[in-house]
Amino acid sequence: MQVGEETVGEETREFLVSGSRDKTVLIWDIIERKDTDEEKEWGVTRRVLKGHSHFISDLQLSQDSKYCLTGSWDGTLRLWDIKKGSTIRRFVSHTRDVLAVAFSPDNR
Image 1 (cartoon, rainbow, N blue to C red):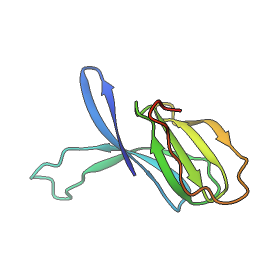
Image 2: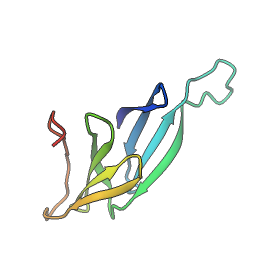
Image 3: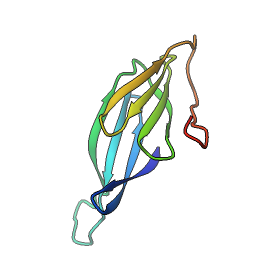
């Protein structure tokens, strides 16, 4: 799970990205909890990213929160454009599960 920030107009909002054994990446809008909210919901799913054929084992947001890198038990990595909700690049040379992913400090 990773928390990112985006600017919408003049407002900066946080969002959350999670990966799951259901093979999806979810992007969540974080909603401020109100004392009168009976269900106490903190977030609402904004988008579901699909493409991996097995469990997602790790994910990482870029420093600018524009991209997400995921690793999966299907042996692939995917670079996602968060705003478009699509895969930019798929990396396919591993012969086994990809257990960890990372961006360098300069987003490489």
